[in-house]
Picture 1 (tube, one colour):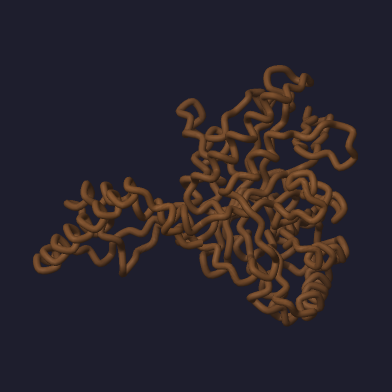
Picture 2: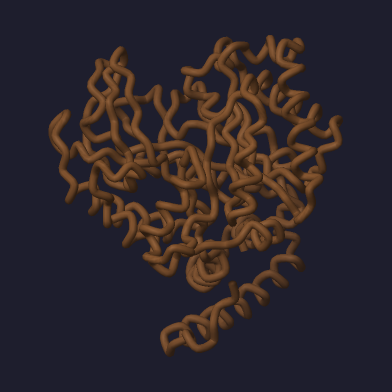
Length: 411
């Protein structure tokens, strides 16, 4: 979306003039540096490699102050061209999804959600609801997981029949035409340690496994353009299992993101200290000197890892247990939702937020969390904090046909 001329006020004009002045200043100093052979051709890129076309900030240390002053306008332009941010939710059925959008928009035919999230396993049959979702205006985000085999067993061929069946069914669906595509996140939360495929998993094994599945899809004739491949780690991890270690690379991945929640007091076990977190503490918490073996700063790190990729909040949600286990505080949950979506709207590279609209119960682990903002069954009241937040102009609906041709990369 281009920045509308009608919304450019005097303040913006002043910033634009200031920017042009600084560009001229940078150009003159750049010429001087070139003539003095001060440019470092091997400047470090934020992703950790080197760039032959590094920015002046990376190349010219004396210009750091001037470059920092010039950040304002590019950031503003980036935010303007990166809207609307897409909305996604976990939903089992089309009826549930349509019910939620009707509630949000107040219209029987209204659309607010662009992406519907599902969690099939390779052992499951290919979901026919992919076509149902597409035909009704939704793109599917598939968290494709596995609960039987380790990654080494997968690489040894134990899952080949299931992978190939999925690939063939996916190709048949794509062959219906109309630019059909889906987001596919393979082996989600690989760095958390709680998945079967995480057993004895090394970063190299994960990268090999990811490419192994991709190659079998391509061998079945699945067009590369029909899948947006997603790297979907857990946000929190130990330093040893930080998600950067597992990243397959820009050439393999289209979208990056992570999972992170505000559990509040709905988790009650020895491994988790119940606490109500702010949105920043959920998505970009500071590193904790008291926990040197754990690593945080999820948003900062994922942007540095993949600066050219769109960032999705792949799994997120909040409970309503603000101060006491088992005691709901609806007002606090509404306030948190409003704050979280406002916070994420200001984050560079964030292009989608997928809300985990369900409950999670595991009595053995002391987990009994209700993240829902919309109750399809109508047994509980819906959360207006979510509805109000996602109706803001920062968020919006994009149809599958348009989304198929939309470049989500940071501008």
